[in-house]
Length: 519
Ligand code: PFF
Image 1 (spheres, helix red, strand yellow):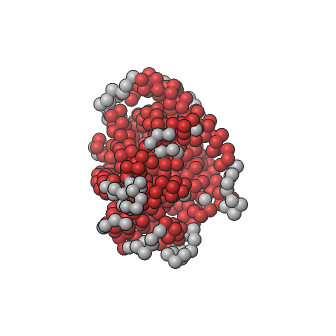
Image 2: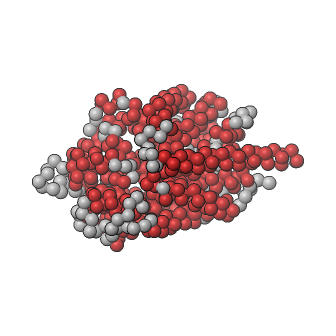
Image 3: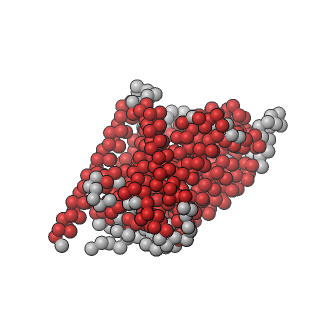
C-alpha cells in the first residue's frame, strides 16, 4: 500500500518555503557581483528578459508538474517525468538530474552557509576587529577556509566546527518534515530575514559620502555603478549567459527542488498565483534589498576602481571581505556585522534544506521507506560527500561542483522539463493543468511563450554556453597542473553519484513492476 505523503499546512507556508529556497546567498552575494562584472545596468536588461521568458515560466511549470506528480505519489523527477510520458522508458533517467543536481549543490552550499554562521559569531566577539584593510580581511578568510595557514587560523578546526553545526541544523529540520520542519522554519526565518535586510539596506543607503576628501565616492554614484546602462554589453553572449544563469540560480528553478516542494500540494491548490508570488518575493529580495547592500557599500568605501577588482575576486568572497570592513567604519559595528551574517545564514539555511528534500522524497516515495530512515541514509551519505568540498576547497573542488551542479544541470534539466511540459504532455493539457484551482488567470501570451519561446531561448543558451564555457571547462582550461587531480577526482565522484542514482531508479522500477505483477 502507498504511504500517506507529507503535506503543507497552509498556503502561506508553501509560499514561504519556496521563497525560502529562492532567497539565498545568491540574492545577497552572487547577484551584486554578477551585475557589477557584467556591465551593471546592461546586465539588468537581459536579466529582466530572462526573468519574463525563463524564470517565471519555469516557476509555473515546476509548480504545476510537481503538483501533478504528487497526485501519483511521486515527489521527484524520475517518477514525475515517467507519469508524464509513460511510453518512454528512458525519460526517468533524465529525471535523475532532478535529484543529482540539488544534491551536488547541497554539498558545497551547506559549507558556504556555515561560513556565514562563523562570521556572525566573529562579528559578535570582535574576531576581525583588529583587521584594518582588505588584504588582512582576505587573509582571515583564507586562513579560515584552510587555504593558507596564518596568524588568524592555523587549521581548519573552526571551519569544521561551524560546518558540523550547520549540517546538524539542516538534518534536524529535514527530520522534522515538510510542515513541522521546513514550513515552520521558513515562516519564522523569512520575515526575520526581510527585516534584517531592510535595516541593513537603509543603513547603507544613508551612508552618504563618508570620506569628505572623496566626494565622488557617494551612495548615488554607487547605485549608478550598478544601474547605469551600457548598451554595448548587450551584444556580448557572455552577459546573456550570466543573466540567465543568475535567474535560474536565484529562483531555484530548473533543478528539481520546486518540483519536490510542489508535490506536497493538494490537487485543487492554486499554483499560478502562488508561483508568481514566490518569484516576486525573491525578486524583491534581490533587486531591492540585494542590490542596495554590498555594491553601494563597497563603492563608498573603496571607490569605483577597487570595487571592480574585488568583484573579480570571487562570487562569494565579496560579502565576507568588504562588508566587515564597511561595518567597522560605522557606529554599532558588531551589531550590524552580526545582523548581516545572520541574515545570510537564514537565507542560506532555508535554501539548503530545500536542496536536501529531493533526495529524501526519492527514498521515501520510490523505496517506500520511513522518513526517519530516509533522513539517516541522507545524512550519512551527504556527510561523506561534503568532505572533499571542505578539505579540497583550495584545489578548486567547490568551483567544479558549482559548474556541474549549479550551472550545467540547471540549463539541461530546464530544457528537458520545458519540452516535456509544452510538447509531450501537450500545451493544451498543460495550460489546463496550470489553471486547475488557480487564483490567477495567466496572460494568454504565456501559452505561446512556454511552447515556443522558452525552449528556443533555452536551446540558444545551451548552445552558446556549451561553446563558450562548456568546452574549455571540460578540457580543464585554466586549471593548474597541481589542481588537476583534485578536479578529476571531483568529476569521478560526480559520475559515481549519477550512476548510483540511475541504478537506484532502475531498482525502484523493477520492484514496482514485480509488485504490480504479483497483484
Ligand atoms: N536560490 C538559492 C540562492 O539564491 O542562493 C540557491 C539555490 C537553492 C539554487 C536551491 C537551487 C536550488 F535548488
